[in-house]
Length: 574
Image (cartoon, rainbow, N blue to C red; front, side):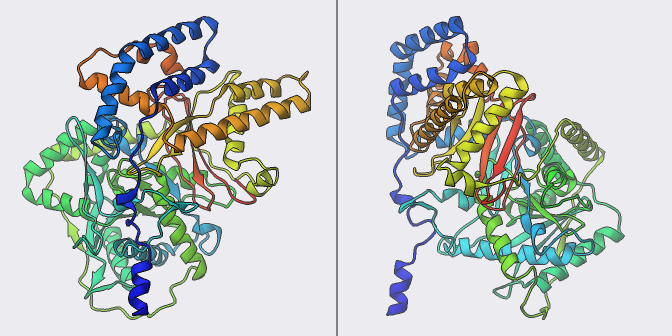
């Protein structure tokens, strides 16, 4: 009886999904007021006056009509933004997503028990894979703890997309296929795909009802590694996933038309739990300098990544690890969560496997051999060439800041994230002599299927503080006062965004309603100040707090001449 009682009171990962509040539609007046405030740092008096007139006209005219239509639409949906956001931010985007949209990062294990060491790739790989598969089983059993703020549960829907999920390219719009099911919902795929030297292998990770152990996984990985390193390379079909989306969609259709077996192979990759990438390179990494490993996780060899896969676990030749994930199905906090879980488990077990060395009689991995012709091989070569050309335009620097961390900022009663955001504003101001329009991710997971809102960090208060810091005649006291005003403003905006009172997604909704109704694009969105202040994804600084753990990651900048700034904050370092 006691056992049954314990079971019924134990929280399940997805149990609050039905009771989460719907995403609200903010008030039009409030959103436009906040928007006007956000453009001020980028406008002279005349420009601002013109934008103010455009906004008033919008508010009293077409804006009000669009807002009413949006309220109508929201009535029938628990999240009015969800489908729109998925399409506009991800699925309609035609530029290559592997480099421009995916997020990637190094694993932190090298900081403790797994420093770079040649000859450890496969053994460590089997252990890290095993910990990942344990997390998959926790998700299947709904035993991953529900995220909460205080006692308030947050939306956990994105965790359903971590495993067995893949984006499928379309001619004009991509789609997402998720094959994951919890145990109570039924069967879920239990195979992984391994990519090595342009070849693809699959094998089940469950044998006779039990998860394979690290020694068993090691046997499978060793078999694949040996085969690929003693035989010619494969064609590298995976490189096609790094292409421009419509081009990849057409190449995929052609591949399927060549041989129906090609579709079966593609579906095996799509439905696999994750893609395990075996890389031949050995990126340099120390606890102070993550630049090369971060770059390799993001860029790396396109023939051993499936760019559309929700999770590529990357293993490098010197026993360090990373990951690369399609951004469409989930945001980085999902990966931060599993990465932290795996890192803690590796740490607790001193980087070793302490169980049985016995290996059961397990079927060998199956190789997926694609039928290809000259056209496919040309497509692959073209994909690789454009990928490497684009990658060469990126400069990635990831260093640890070790002077202090969040312990000190909290001691001074300053919010650690706001502290970094203001430091970033000051750095940009000093470098360029002007304010930089800045996107910071705010999460809206208090609401059903909530994801993100834009928090605009470049406030008037932040600019005034930056100016005071550059003015030698400003007293220390005045600089401090201006800084505290900037802190207060930032914290309030962030709180509003998380509470569903941001304005960027609201404005996007109004624009999309106009498009759906076949109406002309309202002047608000064609006003030069709209994009100059970052509107329409034109932020020069695109930033995000990755978390307060050892885990870190990277995404490319939003604009060609921009900066992507992704940071984690620890007790004694950043």
